[in-house]
Length: 482
Ligand code: FAD
Ligand code: MLT
Ligand code: ZN
Image (tube, rainbow, N blue to C red):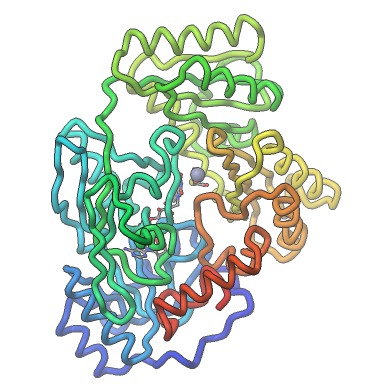
């Protein structure tokens, strides 16, 4: 595991006593290091961050969460809310002995209105479970991502996850209509509105969307879910230059219009890595190209939609904007094509670890960051067989201007870090980009927020944090420096 930057256990926080544990046991099921295996709650998805909690609480209701936080606040016991523990910035695991509040047992669908499409569910409902439930009702969850089998709806809202179809359904800041949350002192904030429009004062729920467990625990969410498209299709093609990739994006927007539901970019390195690790046959048979693009359409008329996508693809091949491309002929093929995109995350860790940067950059320069970073490693003789760096990979949600830069390493090493930081952050700052497009800040980005936010913004954020959480017990050592 990586060492944590510039932190020491904050002695404002009390240490857990046997009396605390007895009290918690009177509220909800408890797992303790003395009698249970709690290693999984201390380790993040990447196995990069490791905490030292000795206690995991599993509330079953909002009232349980309220009682827990009330006690923690009065005793100054620090806590970490944990959803599906799929976060990629180390935000979901403790650093020292913070108590983990696992939302796993709060997993009921509360209501669904088939007319408005509004779903109300507990925070601990797994994203895929919510989507399967909605599928039975002819609706779709307006967020999809590779971790759907484990991540929670509450975790998604807490991180303001973006995912694969943001381009079509928009951000959670638009689709989430209401939030129920427990504040650090145990107060229940009932903003679980199911109204589409509500301009009655400040929109408080927005503060919880993307707050990463720092101002309260989200216990339920209300979200508007569109009808499930009855026709979906996927095209996958190879392109040789980034200029041409941009052209394919412009034409996708123009020619596919309202049925365009994903536009994802993958570089050749990412695809070679997936092929190498999974042993699967590459989707395109001809010569390799520098870039690959996955375009998805979602609409209501299969015949029309397929015809549009085919026309788009054929025109791109004919005028040589792209080198080669295929169209999925059925759902299995579509899923297989998606696996070449969704599978990248898992594969990136294969050689030992990956330094992940999740950034927003004006589209024109989106891929230059990957090239510049790779050049730096080559220049320093750090990239190659038996070298520290295996390769530099770029992929992401091109349709949203969101690049995922991954530096694949054999082990985490200061010498790699020194090449990357602050270089990457300065590079982003120069282009007025964002150092965190969708994964959030957690512990990984806390030291670098100032590259994307000014002092006035940061000072308002710090005062919001201290307004909600004056004792600082909620997910300490993360997000922003207080
Ligand atoms: P956790 O990892 O458990 O927690 C994340 C943060 O939210 C922590 O700070 C935690 O304290 C807080 N939190 C969790 N639940 C609550 C709650 N109920 N109340 C308050 N705070 C809470 N992210 C994207 O944005 N787009 C992607 O496309 C994407 N793809 C991914 C693919 C893979 C394979 C993996 C492993 C991750 C991916 N992620 C992606 C990152 C991750 O899945 C998301 O950040 C997800 O939203 C986290 O949900 P979770 O339930 O696992 O939260
Ligand atoms: C993705 O787009 O696949 C996710 O954000 C995960 C990642 O960046 O690895
Ligand atoms: Zn992503």
